[in-house]
Amino acid sequence: MLKKKDKYVVAVVGATGAVGNEMIATLEERNFPVDTLRLFASERSEGKTLEFHDKPVNVEILTDKVFDGIDIALFSAGGDRSLEFAPAAAKAGCVVVDNSSAWRMDPNVPLVVPEVNPYDLDWHKGIIANPNCSTIQMVVVLKPIHVAARIKRVIVTTFQSVSGTGKKAMDELMQQTGALLNFQDITPTVYPHQIAFNCLPHIDQFMDDGYTKEEIKMVNETTKILGDDTVKVSATTVRVPVFRGHSESLNIETEKHISADEVRAVLSAADGVLVYDAPDKNIYPLQTDCAGKDDVYAGRIREDNTIENGINMWISADNLRKGAALNAVQIAEELIRRN
Ligand SMILES: NC(=O)c1ccc[n+]([C@@H]2O[C@H](COP(=O)([O-])OP(=O)(O)OC[C@H]3O[C@@H](n4cnc5c(N)ncnc54)[C@H](OP(=O)(O)O)[C@@H]3O)[C@@H](O)[C@H]2O)c1
Image 1 (cartoon, rainbow, N blue to C red):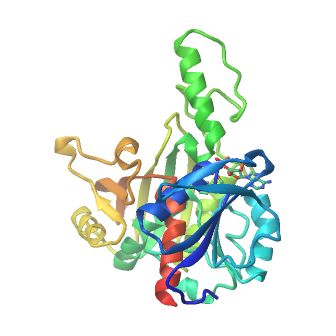
Image 2: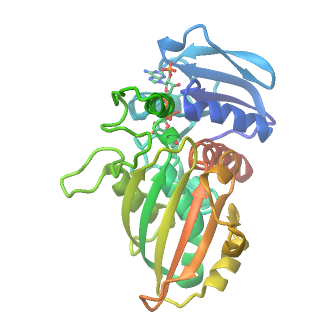
C-alpha cells in the first residue's frame, strides 16, 4: 500500500525509451509531488543523464536490489523486465504501475483507466497494470455510452502510429521516408515490410485463429476494464506511417437507442474526452491535432442506419500520453487521492 506523504520517491523504469521520456515530461508538467526521481534503464544507458525540472538526473542500471525506499515505480521497459522486476519492487513496498502487457490479464492485478474504473485501484496488491494504448483511448469513449445505452458489440479498426512500437520504429519510418524520396533502397528491420508510404494490417504476433495479439488484447482488456464480459469486441489493428497518435474507427451497437446528438452530449460531459465534431468546418479528430494533448478526441459521430441501435465514430489520442505515460501518472495521482 502507498503510504501517505507530501512528496514521493518515484522511479521511472525504462526512462530512456519513448514512453519513459514521456513519463518524465508528464510528471514534470503535472507537478506530481516528487521528492526524488530515480531513473533506470539497461547497461546500454550507463553514464547517461536526463533532465527533470531543469536538473540532470543520472540513469541507473536496473537490478532487483534498487527498489528499497522507492514509493512508486512507473515501469515501461518491456514485458520481460516487468515479469522479472515488478514482484521484487512490490515486495520492497513499492507500488508498481506497469505499462507492459505482462500483468494486464492477471486476476490479482487491476487494469485501470482512471476515468473508467478508478475503484479497481482499491484492491491492488502492489502491481497495477496500465492497459494497451489502443484499449485506453477506446474505453474512455465507450464507458459513458455503455452507462447511457448499454453496449452490446463494438467493431473497431485501428490506425496506430509507429511510436507505439518504440524509438527504433520512429527512426525506421524517418530513415525509410528519406531514403525512398531519394530513390534509394530500404531494408525493413523493425517491421516485416516497408512502413513508409504503407499500412500494415499486422500488430504483434499472429495467433492460430488469424487474429493478432494486439487485437486479442483489445477484446480482453475492454471487458476487464468495463467489468462486463457481455460486451463483444471485434478488432482489426493496423500500423500506419504516422509518428505519433493513434486513430480508431468505432462501430458501436447498443441495447437502448441513443442518437448521435445524445452521444455528443454524453461524451461532452465525460472526463478525458473532447468532442471534436464539426464536419461542415472540416473539424474531426486527427493524429496531428491530438499529439501532445491529454484528451481522447471524438468526432464523425453519426447513427449507423444499417442496424436498429448503432453509432459510428472516429477517435484519436496521443498513444505516448493517454495511451501510456499520462494514464500511468493519472493512476499514481488517483492512488494518492484515494489514500
Ligand atoms: N510506445 C507506446 O505507445 C506504448 C504504449 C503502451 C505501452 N507501451 C509499453 O511500454 C514499454 C516500453 O515501450 P517504449 O515504446 O518506450 O520502448 P522503447 O522506446 O524501445 O524503450 C525501451 C526502454 O526499456 C529499457 N530497457 C530495455 N531492456 C532493458 C533491460 N534489460 N533492463 C533495463 N531497461 C531495459 C530501455 O533502456 P535502454 O535505452 O538502456 O535500452 C528503454 O529505456 C513496452 O513494454 C511497451 O509495450 C508502449
